[in-house]
Image 1 (spheres, rainbow, N blue to C red):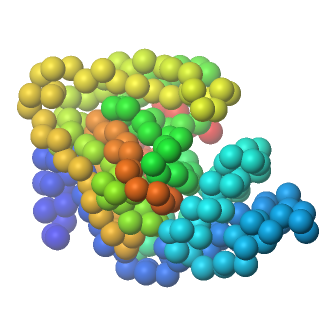
Image 2: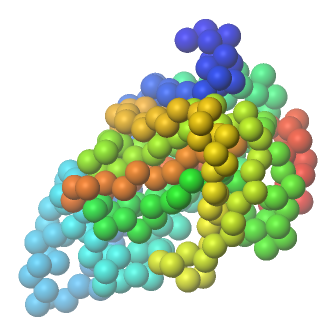
Length: 272
C-alpha cells in the first residue's frame, strides 16, 4: 500500500492489517513463553507427578503442548500464571516484535514521522473454549494504573493514538479472535462503564454499550489473520473478543502507540 492508501484506509475503517518483515519475532515470543511456563511448572513439580513430567518433556511450540502448560498453570498455580503474564509483557522479545520494520514504517506514516512512542505493552494468553479474557465491546485506553485511579483517561480523545494487536498463534473463529465495528472510530470517544473483573478481583475493565446509530452505520467485521500479521487500529475503534470453540491457546500481544507531538501524550505524560 502507498502512504496515501494507508491514511485513507485508516480514516475509513479504523484499522489496517500489516505483514511482518521479521518472521522470527513470532517464534521468539512463543519460545520465551514456553521457557517461562517450563520454569514455573518445574518450580511446582514433584518427582511423583508423572503427568507434569510428561507435559514438561514436550518442549515444542504446538497448540496442544502450549495449551496443556498454560492450562495447568492457570488452574493449579494462579499466582505463577500471573507472574508469567507480567514477565512476558515486559520482555525484550515483545519490544523487538513491535520494532518490526513494517509495523514501525506504518506507524511513522500514521504519525507523520513525529516521534512514535510505545506507551504500554502486554501479552495475553487465552485458553479456548474456557476463555478468561473475553472482553465485551470497548475502546482501548493507555492501561496505566495511575491513570485508572485518576480517571484521566475519560478526558483523552485518543484520536491520535493506535493499538498494535499481534497474534503469535493464529487468530480465527476456532481458537478465538477479534471483532470490530468498521468506521466506529469516527464517532470519537464514548462513555464506558468501569466494571470489576470477575476473574481477577484486583483489576477492572471498560465496557461499552454501543449506541444504536453506530450499530446501524458500522459493519461488523471478524478479523481472521495469520501469525505473521498484525492489526494496527485506532484506539477509538470499537472492538471485542470472539471466544473460540475448540481447545487451544491464543497468545496475543498488544502495544499502545502515540506521538510525543499528540494531544493524548501531552495529557497523559505525567501519569507514566
